[in-house]
Length: 472
Image: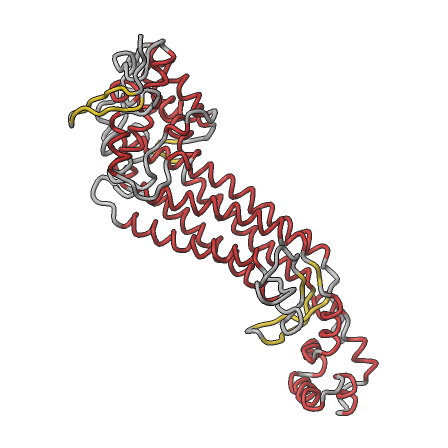
């Protein structure tokens, strides 16, 4: 028998030729034609493909338990889902990530791939839908409107795990640097002006603390993703589901996904509400802002090497100029800045998409899904890049820091409790005008003897609260 390179499938719009070896079907083919938007397919979102597989497997097992599906059909569907969960056949998810229809094209892409793989497991060929049908069997007791939002939550949860791991790694890198630099004195700055002394370790410890706080906020947002609307079907009423399906399918989903998912208290509300995505997006924006601030600080602190601040030395990663020999730029922090700008923009996208949902469904969840996926993926990768290619190789510019501390009039601030603000200001003003040493100036003004000043201006007094040392 001659094998033809194409097969034909039909829907209510008509017939369509498809590649014989494709596991997707006519609905997917139409979506590919309709949405040539980004050039990025669902295969670029592996966490979403696996989440769809977990949802479809849970539904098949619940439907088998309730007699909706024959055991052989449910078993074949479950086997096909296991393949997707293991990373197989993701290249068959060919629909563009941006699509109209509230995710229907994504759901049908999954239904068709799973159905055709199930057919193969039963000994048939792709397209033999009398064995396993995409709608009647794979999509039984479901709607796009409960499958898709549920899968998005599971996928976002997985992507967030990846981000949290990368963020934790970066935080720990800053903690190690804080320990390494714990005794390195420097001058702190406020409003880009000299402030008071601190240690470089305190500066890097603050970066670590900020990221640790963001990890907590992300985990809070992650918890909100575990409340799903599976079992709601079209608008939350559960139409076309058998009695007991809602509770049963949530239990199976917990087993299939490995996550403690729970059913939303009000399925009608949950089907139209995207608050969990808004909360997650806001938390990601917060992380992005923090990371961008830290990246900008690293760029500023390393500026120079001769005409800038030069407190720290970043590892040289590549030549910085096509015309200036030897120039090295802070390219890794710059990349982090740009990812942060992207994430902040994505938050606006998610906000507008969430606000624009109408009545019983939000049609714009595909945009939210893609924006959140990109934000989490790019943040995770940029955190790893910043950690390995920048933070771990940062060095203190000891010579510069020691000279600045020795010359700085800001040390006088530590004397306020001893000599008073007015006398301290007199010393600063005179030292700046004359360029003299603050000890000599203090002695000349009759405010404090140089040896007494030296006793007071020790590292502990300069960098710790007053209660930790003697103010007298």
